[in-house]
Image (cartoon, rainbow, N blue to C red; front, side, top):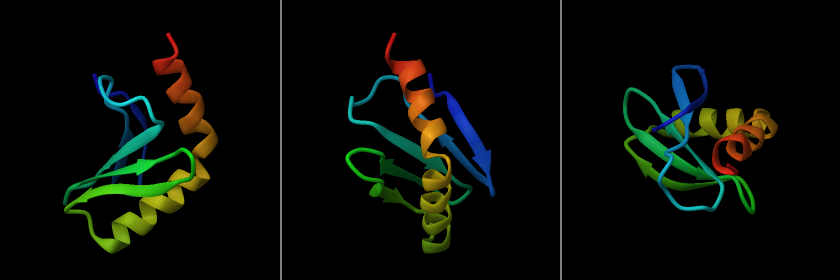
Length: 79
């Protein structure tokens, strides 16, 4: 299961249900996918094909939606 947290600017922000416990979010574009750590700080963990512009946009949107991402993470994983 891969619940979508939100979509914006052609990017899909989502989680994978069966992955590591450190808080993070995946971002998918038409070009590729990236993974960003949310804790301890927001930072790029992996990039597979996304452009620098997409990564900057994703990082900005993650910072803007950080509270929603954290809330959705806890709702999904703290069962």
